[in-house]
Image 1 (cartoon, rainbow, N blue to C red):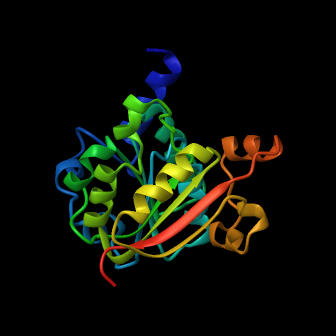
Image 2: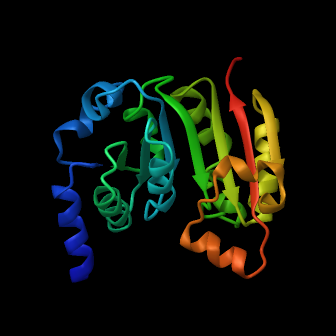
Amino acid sequence: MTRRKTHRFLQNAESPNVIEVGKPLYKAIRGRWRTDYFKNENPIVLELACGKGEYTVGLGQAFPNTNFIGVDIKGDRIARGSKAAQQFGLTNVAFLRTDINFLLEFFAEQEVDEIWITFPDPMPRPKQEKHRLTHPRFLTLYKQVLKASGTLHLKTDNPELFNYSLQQLKAEKIHHLQFTTDLYNSHLNTIHIGIKTKYEQLFFDKGFTINYLQCKMGAI
């Protein structure tokens, strides 16, 4: 392990806005994010596979009356988001270090209002399909933790993943599906309020179009 990674793991251990193995809330937080962590009754929004937390932090700045939680397994990545959130004084931003497969261990049914998936690994090979974050097994998890009519958002530069995701969602019980293959030239552009991650900006600067969708999951 590099010295830089070691430093970031130590930073996570000391950061109050990171929930991870070894901390008291790690096994007790399920169903208690509002009461035990955020200390308010505001909506809860997840960013899955949040990486360095750029989107989580950006949303936290834009919507101070909403609680945001970035979820990722990579501790050295979320350490950067954790630090940024603290530097900006964002008490409405937290990070959970865990595998997304274990989402139900940390969120009760209908505890979450929205889920964002921003530029996930497309997992392009057929044998990787079950690891795509819009595979039916993940969609089942999202339906359980989202409130009735909770919103799912997806942003990706990868057309194959986007088309796959549309296909999977249309096969599920969803409502109010909206999508575009060119976000920045679409009326849906206002929804993501202009936040770009580092990689999104690189894709955009190279002329790639950004695919976006949102839908309501569960019963209306």
